[in-house]
Image 1 (cartoon, helix red, strand yellow):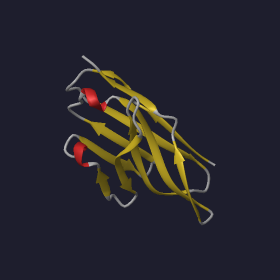
Image 2 (tube, rainbow, N blue to C red):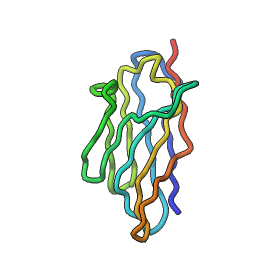
Image 3 (cartoon, rainbow, N blue to C red):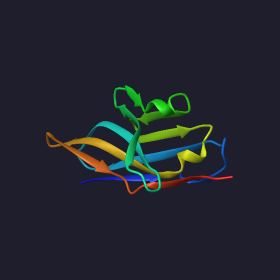
Image 4 (cartoon, one colour):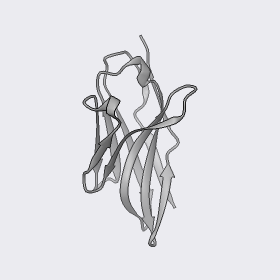
Length: 119
């Protein structure tokens, strides 16, 4: 079993920066990729960014240049650095991981961390 624990959300003002973290823990697993998804109030969950353990990244077009995803292999932790935050960035941010256990691929989700951008 693998657990994803997120942290770093909070209440910020427009233009501020924030860093989200998501640490994967468990036994005998291999991480293939991790990513961040956002669910705004009343909306569906949407992709923000993903990163493979090899370092390949993918961003939704609207966040390119403002958000940066990174991965620390030693800590099994993915980060989302968010700059120049806008009101529309408000939502619950969920961590996702594509993980291999015993040759089988699983997708795990974190519990979500709230980000509120408000003036």
